[in-house]
Image 1: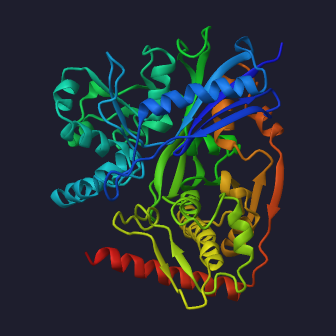
Image 2: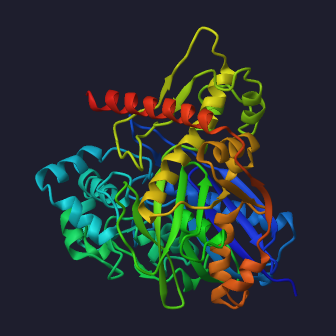
Length: 500
């Protein structure tokens, strides 16, 4: 009988259902975008009920597409946009408010106030969680919902409301409300979880005024979470769960200390495996849990650029410069003089590592009378490469050595111009795998290992194949001049954001 692992990849703008076979190959995939809402400046929301409905739809259509039968599905893995917070009634299953997305900046002033009230608090939070006090993470979003939705705090304190990131929401619905759980990787992105003790932290819950009764059970990323009671007619075990960046790191087989990957998704995220002992960055990077498996926890250093693929979507959806996102490479190649001195800072919802400025906004520098849309499109693509350089340099300084290769994945990594420019500006080999759906693959691997679908991680490494290695070709003087222009644009952006 044919056997498959189903991976549910709940991203920021779309949901994918992907089926993997024993060789780690994709047998069937179906994806669908869902709505984004922007009710105020810096606010980003999604409808949890729509997310759940689309999840069922993509699973059904992916099965139908390749005639996959329920009895052929051995296990399910879930991976998700992290930090996005959902609060719902455990009795009715109804969300009390829209999902507040990781990009949302509504709690930035509250975070500033926390730091102003107690100058020592950020050091305490960093030591416990590996994170900065920032509106990016889930904890302050939960507090906002409890404080601003009528009756929510009272219901939460009575034990009627529960919280979860998107993985917990999907899992709770899949199991018919029987499983309220998450894994170490997702918990470590909430600002409420102690990454050393592997427990919800009482002091942090008190700081944010979040009742402990709201929180999901936390367990290893590979193991039994529950069985399905919705969508399928039979019970199928859910045995894998990890946040999207941790899943992508696992999917890229970065199993050893010092291995690094960069995901070019809605955001741009670089992670490096730092082994079983965490340490704090001196360069604005976060320390986070990668995954828990077989009684061991692996830690990552991580840096995030809030806008990567979303900047290309902006060209397509808001600026009408593109019909489809992949068209960006065609138009960028038409630019007569590269970007013609144009720099684009994609700070639509602030700047993250290594700058950490919630108030920065997207800016274009260097426009002249002869600037064309092709120059702007190219500048947007190149901004992803410059952000990669920012992160790469910060990682190298923290690690005390320069990384020798960077594995890449995510939709935008299929853009050859972008990958070559990134290799040039960072001055490192860029390795693109045959299967760039590494986030979904990571969730599938975690689920499959738990049920013996794959024997061990060594078997998974043997199945990974490489499509292209991009090698640096740019002269050092050109690389230096271009990057100096980028840093100048960053300084101007930060100055504008600070002069409020």
